[in-house]
Image (cartoon, rainbow, N blue to C red; front, side):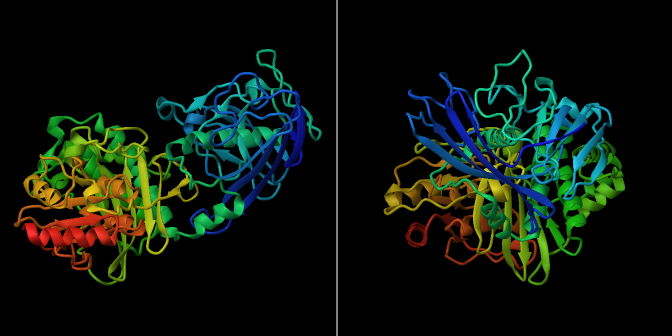
Length: 582
């Protein structure tokens, strides 16, 4: 099946509402979105009726294709917006029959995605068609498909927050439409089961509204005044801000986060072992480290890895069950990432790849596969934390926080509730820090730039600390310290490096950590969080003001705990108070 689509520029009037759409498909030639497309569009809606309307309808329609709040338009009023997205790849949850509209070649193709390996046609950067054989076993479709069906723009079934093939502009189901010759500005005929066109339903406007609706649902979690809808050039600029290594890092952390979320509900007591610092280690700890190690080794084999876990327990005679379960989790998670499965020996080798010492030379990753394992076990906050060391300093960091809500912590709260899909924080030296939903297909496009929340008086500050069941918590000292600063708000208690993410996005003003004198801090417990806070405008040091030095190997040499604040002024006040109280 092959028909011509209308021009990417459309201008149509339906029931007195005029919709002008300008769409473009721009190859993203720069890292980290190499060989993907930036799909940008501008939409202008004008009311030509004598009476006020909302998107041309008497009733409100959920997700009408406008990002953010949609106004009611009086006679002659206009409303316009721009947006963009990076299209990625087809996933198993997209099972069904679709039409693919290419804004580049102006051709429309039928695509079928089924539980069994289907035959899928897709467009390329030229008019050449290639066959794509996708391995989509039924087990992949057991996970909830994220397809929703509100009546939007002639009632088509939309795709919400999914990853797309990089060479396909958009997809929409054939079940509601007949595929016919489409002259410019014509409408796609609908079946008798759907209302006739409420708005413009040219193929290009359908493509625009499909992506805009999906993007609107993703961005509701991070709807801030600073959030500007990106056109193609802005999307490319966002990608340019971060080196390609950070794209691999976010991919690895997202995969490990998916594994951890699935495993959290499957833990059994006999699958936990104790570590030297008395925190539990689970199947997810080992599997997450293996996943990150394998993904990063393939992407950048010359960059080493310093990581928390060792496969020694798995290699022991009593580790057979643990080996099997970890390997199963790794292969399940990487089924779509690699065209092969990994043996138990390969998985254990990937884990032990992280047993290097680090240091001040070269480039290497620093990984904590599950930071806050007590939070993980008890259904609280935890994080997958990955940092990049280059030339003796931390230059990049990614925090995957699967249980962290997108909304800020309200003042007066004493803990963070769990929420799905979680949050992703990413930072690089000199480029700032971004936050987005953990299921974002491209954090560098969807991410919101974050900054710490400054406070003019220390008495107005709020602070975070670890839970009482943590070995690094000294609530007696932090209570005395906060009282000496005049702080009246109760502490917010959070597990893991999720605290660094919360501080970076302005939830609180301070993070206080004072472990026992005989406790040695590890680099993986702070590296990723430290760079995220610093790039968001915060300050971090030990309790005497000495900067954290991650170039000495696997441990940090510090005095009197670790403190992080939202500003240099507050940090100075905090250090002065520590010197007095201790």
